[in-house]
Length: 340
View 1: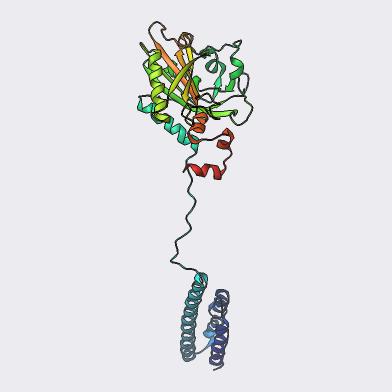
View 2: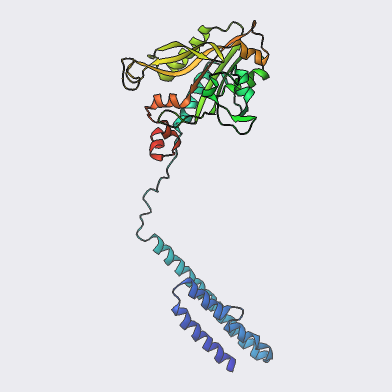
């Protein structure tokens, strides 16, 4: 039969092409050429309908045997090529060596400092309150006894969004919102970003972080304020730290004071960091001005309170010996990686 001769020729062709296979692409081409829908074996089987019953039986058996043989050999070659490829990929690699450890990020020094400040005040019973960064003039100025014509307003006048709203220049605006929403006793701290039109240099930035505190109740005195701040200073900088209060002016507190601590670098002896006087200014504080209580509807004959505020960057610079505030915002991994 001519068809049997054709099958024998297909078998020889397959052997020749099979032996040339050296990659997966060549293997797939051989499979398609001999076993595919338009392959050589299927072309033979398409013409089997015109044969006699006996011829169909012989040709069909022979074609199926070739098909099974081709399939087995192609499968075995595929497995061999995959094993060879896997071996090539790992050649020269010591799989017992440890992997490359990915770089792990660190907590930003400002985040660490804010968390530490918050935890100290939380341990004294303070709660955290947050508020808007975009505020009205009333909450940012008027309610804090800073009217439009007040000379201290120049230092706080900040970036205006429009005629009505501006970026807050302190977190004192949160104090007003808290007092409007709650009746005393109140004991809260207010951390957050604030904005002022300061020229950027080693110690100033147009944006920085502030933590303010507020305590309001019956019979709150200046001695309560001093006790809270002394506990904070010793918890933050060490038990051997000393604290002093200097008279100052803030429109929203009366009396007011600047709070200094003994220099943590020279222990009060005098050095470059403290400009030789042995003291470092860290925050401002005072008793809440009665006009602030009047703005929120508190009875000034019944309630008293104190407030304080500090810059987180200032505290962080003292804690970590950082001399330039701009380092906090440059995202330099060489700098940030030191605070693991």
